[in-house]
Image 1 (cartoon, rainbow, N blue to C red):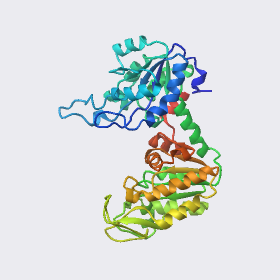
Image 2 (tube, rainbow, N blue to C red):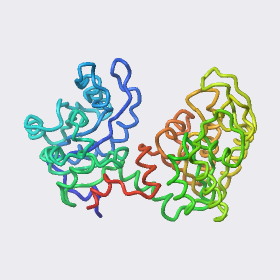
Image 3 (cartoon, helix red, strand yellow):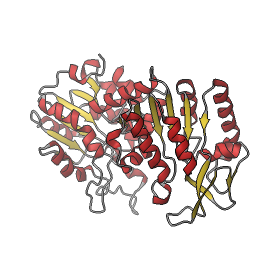
Image 4 (cartoon, one colour):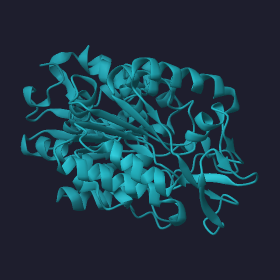
Length: 405
């Protein structure tokens, strides 16, 4: 099968593994969340066991967008060397680091690797050609290894040099998906191809415009769509409701009505929150109250789904066979407005316990379920917000297509 890592002979081979080590760091450059490092462990450990020579490649932050005052790249702030201690501890052996990702010296370093050795190269985004998908940069990267493995699902929707273009230098017998990437694709298929019904989708987040394609794709597959977060108020206002200072995309009001009409025609309800937690200002210490979503006072803004909506949404989830959740129900980063998201997290965990397959679509949704302490009680949490969103919208991911060529 194309893309199957276990089908490749990796012993004593130099294996380039594109990982996603774009992890958060503290002020003293300590890794504060090792989720992405742990996500890469199965692939790394397998390659070590098989006696491969492992060359890890990743981006880290946006160094070219945040230059120093003199116009130079901040090579300390954006260096992947800060990841080495945490990664070494996780894999249980020393990970070497080299301060470049291409060039003659990097090539020499890769040639010196022994069986089971792990080498982490410097941030690919120190080169402008990375995000531009520069063929010359990709060619230099390809020289480093005999085999290419893409395990960076979170970057699979980008046609960058290290995620997509480099894969074109390897034939089907010398490239594959890493185990994390394969797991992401397999779980996405469970909500895309022959999902177990009833299929309930929960969509949140700030903007309708971010989710238009997803809503349209879901109208073909899901049985009902539950809407929360800031995007709900565009729908409420489109129907004539008063939403105060709530986040609204006025240029999407007509589209919201079209989506509602399409859903009604298909007999697949789009469920909006009957009430909201409205606040006087966008602040953690703001005064707030529970009001009908279509009667939010002037100057106030909806920052979470209300008490009635929480109960109603939980009821809509009862008996679900498949649940997709993409986007929080409110400003969950602020304690006062996190209760709606937590209530939905508990409800999703409960229906999962009853036999439903639940996929949490990465990004803020993943952060919200982690914050709720229920990460172990759902079926799968995606590591790639944007990539999973595009996959569920039905788009091809360049990083995936390049492996299957």
